[in-house]
Figure (cartoon, rainbow, N blue to C red):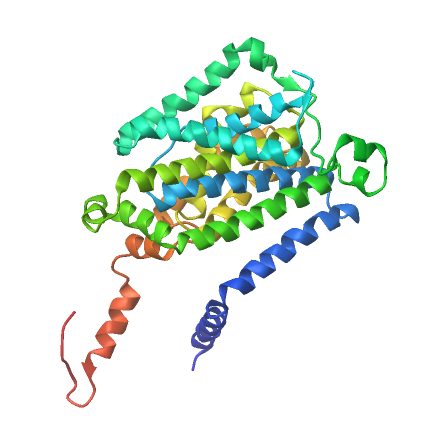
Length: 381
């Protein structure tokens, strides 16, 4: 056996060993790494800027998981997804800021922000779910821009372009309890490390719930509609009901993420909800792998951390390379579409669709059909 063959066999053995590991092992490893990351900042090994990038990355992970329900599981292209994010953020800002002198409980604000976004998702889904493809994309794009322009022009309620400032930090106790000090005062979340762990817990819970939903009858119905809507309807699936559920649930996740974003940012404005943000979330889903929950998580983290890497590289080189951030986004997506259209960690169905005829599978089929005794092929493939 040559050295080249040994190397190839060694790599193949390692790949086979890793592929046989159960999924929960990878999830546990990812959770451990994510949980240890803030401790590196406490120890002074990681800058606070990277910790802030981690918080925003986790918020965008939630956004990407929500969009994956509509885009990856059901096959609907939504280019105005950031509008639901804005609904959640502005609901939080209005209910927990000096704007109207309100300071609602943290959990109540989270629930109401998600509910407002879900209502908006229901209202937009009723007239648009009969549309498909480019028409649906155009309508959702227009919806996102209408929401942003409305926020900009509704000055008495949203302060227009100036946004809403002074959003109170989330607290898991009442103001009277916090005034007494002790544990209740500690339950006020106002540090980057605390925000990080709060959002991380939300992401873990959301990923577990969506994984179970993906493997349920509802998830299989979404996949059936994505693959062939006519066949799915013929099999007894109510297309309008399944699509509406996907849109409403996706909008609720975006509203929940928007609420966390408002709490963390302490200030929000219409510039945070531009159309380009919707495009970036779409890119995260495509890059990671549509329909794949681990892939969407990785895609969101990669694209959200990339600007910080470019920024530090540009600072070290003392250049203006950072201005090419969106160009790098585009090149990365084009390269992925050409060489790995199924994404970084693809869903099994998308992998099969992207490589319908795998030469390696074809060769293994030919070898298995070869009759060694007769020296002839029983069947030519």
